[in-house]
Length: 259
Image (cartoon, rainbow, N blue to C red; front, side):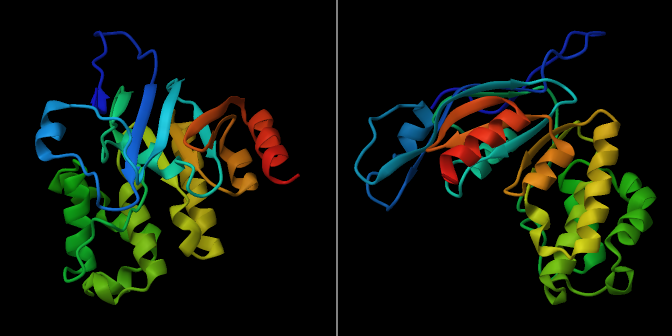
């Protein structure tokens, strides 16, 4: 294992050259429990050749993202898109290469994962926002806005486990979208929500982009990709097939899989 996801310092008074820099990125998974690396290997960073039952979810992936860019990531299911976002978010470590992140990220990926079933909606808002770096005073100031955006104020003191899947996505998006991190990671988390709420969320994403945020957006919906993104990354078999203008990337992707 080489360099992990790292925050890169910027010289005082200088704008960052890039928001994300990915170099030779690779991550390996196992189809079964055989051939697992030992804890000693993990600590030492020792590499092994790929063993039977292992495969590379990503390998040799290199690209830069400049501040304020909106990147759409495309590819069939199982080609490494969500894995890439998790690596950028810092919740997963690479086996090869590096992910350098200039500043913090607001991860709209598996956004309901950190919520606690037995706590109320109110308690979960404070807990989740706090885990992402917001102070209690900041949450106090934005609490009503969060509930208003989610549209579930009547359930504020209801245990989270009693919410529907759509309501869970509503409150999770409402919290995460309030984070002031400069990089927004979105992984089709809104598929559960109803059409009206999806449009509300997309309007919020457009508002964040207008404010200079950087967007990394995974979607199978070309209309959504074209709405937000000007540049695309096409992943196939864990490799970066094409990095370029979104129209060119979508054309290549469709030619490969719709012929």
